[in-house]
Image 1 (cartoon, rainbow, N blue to C red):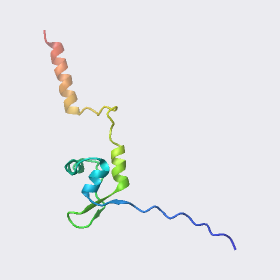
Image 2 (image 1 turned 30 degrees about the vertical axis):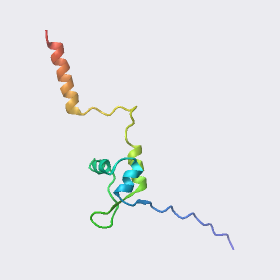
Image 3 (image 1 turned 180 degrees about the vertical axis):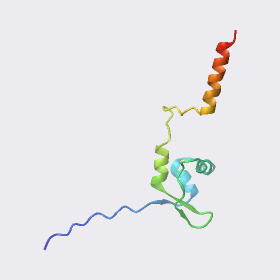
Image 4 (image 1 turned 45 degrees about the vertical axis):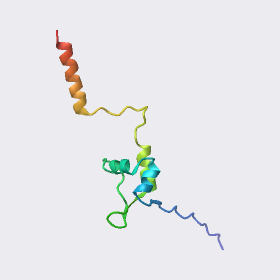
Length: 96
């Protein structure tokens, strides 16, 4: 009789319990966490245990933070700011 191979069971999906725990995981205050939730690209909750009880995948939150630029990486300059700066430089260069 051939030996049966047992594949390891998949790791369970770990959910963050509540917004305070999520804020703690990210190292920010609950108020800052609420502001982060408004940003585009921030992970959406995957489970709602009532209207005020969202849950996130731990891995999604960690991946979001790991994808943020570091202080060594300058953030991209917004297009309106860049065009205004260029216009100002052109204006100054053209002035007598």
